[in-house]
Image (tube, rainbow, N blue to C red; front, top):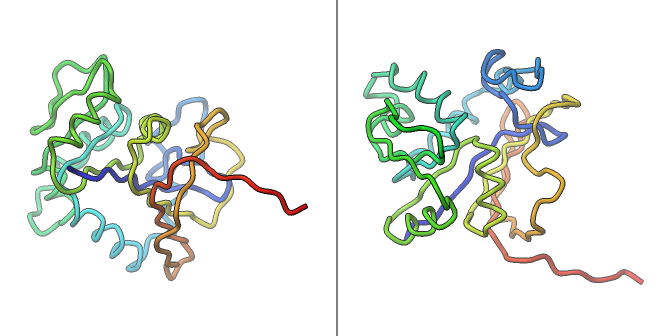
Length: 203
């Protein structure tokens, strides 16, 4: 059975929209795209390469899939570990509208996505990775389908934009399993799913 991980870049105020460039996602008038770029360094690259090295398949939301499919197939250097894995490993995209994906190796998961992902985890070995894909990541968390979450917290506050954890999320507990800070101040936290929260009182 495969494990499912999410890897997400977030600001100090929890925004995850358009970390990679000004035109990546301007929906709802978002004009702060590219906020993660100034913090890229060797530590950051090493961590991300390590994440991709563990991948056996990818599961993406439609918006992130379109962004990735417009970029990564053009990166043909076999020495690029991220491009090599994204282009060669199986990819699944959660969508009820995409009919003919152009990125080789892509399967569309429609209908009851939670059931389809549960079946995929049962029938796959290794690690299925979700990158970005905020709406999908929240949906998977709400259905207890995420085993590991890598949150890369960047030292910047934006004040607007789509957030990973929105009002109404299913209460969920995690176990903190690893942490590091890059040379440019990105705090990388890894959490394992731990079921429902427990409550107490200091009184």
